Image 1 (cartoon, rainbow, N blue to C red):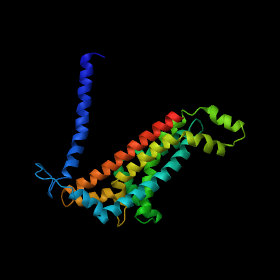
Image 2 (cartoon, helix red, strand yellow):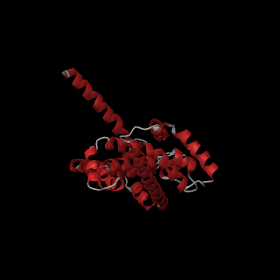
Image 3 (spheres, rainbow, N blue to C red):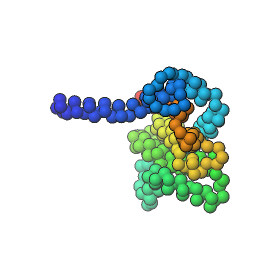
Image 4 (tube, rainbow, N blue to C red):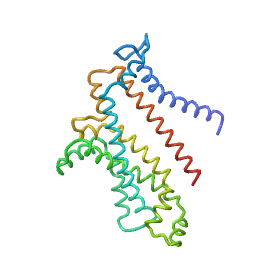
Length: 261
């Protein structure tokens, strides 16, 4: 690689960094503005908007509600996605391609089409809109991501490990829980965090399938309809910080487990 090429690549990289982080920095700064309106210049600074986020019982309640949905849908996605991955990994049988295609299909369908389909299907099954309907829709949407991550991890599992366990008297059930599942922990943590973030951030399916209690993205959307304010920036900043902490924890956990394995 020539010197000019390296300089060009560095410029492109830092341009991307600026493009990515400058809007986030501006969003955070606007949360400190001592005014009800978004815009520059910032003449005075305040922490009132951030303090108000933690004092607002509606925001706290919606945050807990969204977190509950994210955790429940992630647990279902991990269970179903892992089961499908074990079924498909390292095997060749009639219909495998069809099963794999159906598994990843929810990930490639546009969100609005998926949300409308779930709403129609929920009405057909008599499922009321609300938490259960949102969890169901989020879980179906997240299963493909779990399956792809777990299958990639399973592809690196030496067959000798499970064969040795079965030679020592373990059946497939015991071998899975004693050998395969511990080996999959880094993949499951990564997939779980990714699914939680997808569920927490999902607006379209939550909007179509939600009941009277909104999720956090729906609440932010409802507040935006009356205009931008630093309160929205403060809420978004708190969520951004918590997301970053969760992502860093997941990355370090996967790295430690990968070294241990």
